[in-house]
Image 1 (cartoon, chains in turn cyan, purple):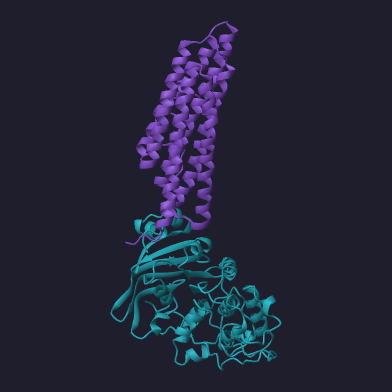
Image 2 (spheres, one colour):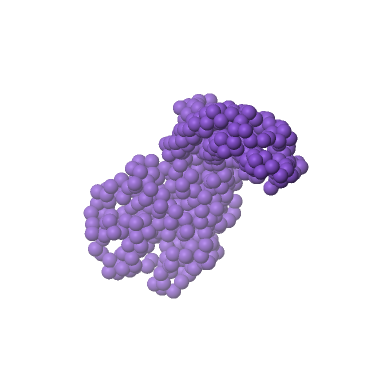
Length: 329
Length: 232
């Protein structure tokens, strides 16, 4: 694995305020690649910027001087591809994922299906290095984002997780924070302290998930006061506010009612134009509805990966056929 | 291995049985219709016409069942292919029933004492036997998921089409007797109906191929099939 980018650390600073009213002053911490105060556009790539800073990052102290969240440079618009190669994931001595090689195509939704315990959540958690947070868990092999090894030496894990955001099964808004602060929290950690830009970004994120009109009059109220579906969309807004390249979703609708589920699915369809999305789901119809491609896992192995239509009409592997038709489970 | 959708698969199996059972009804109607033509049996023909309601009822029953399965069970993969194929197949069954009824409705029109032409009647009888075999073969092909049987239907269908054309030619040449010519025109329509039943059998065989392979190809495009329909 080559050590590329990702070693830069976002010097986010203090934990965000619960008061959404402080929006007057924009404070940038580090601006290594662009002119002071220049605002990154949604098409800009954290990863590319970090790559360009690679040389500086290798210098003593570079991480603290070059790693600001605003240290981004423009790259060409386009999707971001995640590739896992020969990936093995373990919980202690138990191997949960076996020699997985798979490409998650840019600007597509890839659904991972399979019975409980097949390793699909583990695989997803490896993609943004959350797997290693579990005591005794580790992984080997390679995962790259646009060719950059996210497990490379010196790669900053928190940056990986900002570039590769994650939405969980249960909506998890920060319980003590307002709606506004829930979305702003990641931005503040990334260096946006306050100001119109912060507010615009929060509004843009809430709009992107179709939540703005529903919450614009109660931005200062607790996020946990929203309905379950709204909370999940709030969490998605929090994820996309920091403009990740990839969004991972682990059973994002399993706790939602059908209407909220359909809203999330519509949202996924809209988000894929900007993000690469990987979704773990037990709901095969959901996979059929939202995913461009579907990956079937069984006992830690990748059994079949193909266009969703093909997987659900004419799978190649007999095990896939038996699983999707309910002939074992 | 645990079968997790037993009720669903049982329902699907029953719907397939009902669909293929519809072909048994078609064979029964076909036998009677051809017999009614041979013996100018108007009463038998009227029974065939009345019994077409059974085939129509079977179509509605299966169609509703399949829609219910689609709505409630969201079948996928081979199950989805089977549901789609059954929707096509049961429609073909219903059309075959209509063709039998159409043949039967021609019999009173052709007159009780109309002069007949033995060559045409023999050809109709031969067509009836071939179409009957074709319907039974397409049933077996579907039930057994046997693509080879499905492919062999083309050979049978070619002979049916050939007879259809022969009957048409004979009707043109049958003579100057107006009653005989009129009867001959009715036999052309009977032959056309039989030929259509054969075509429906071919369409069901194409669905067999779809269930097995997931691919839909009209049979004349399949490799190693010597020819298409001759009557077109």
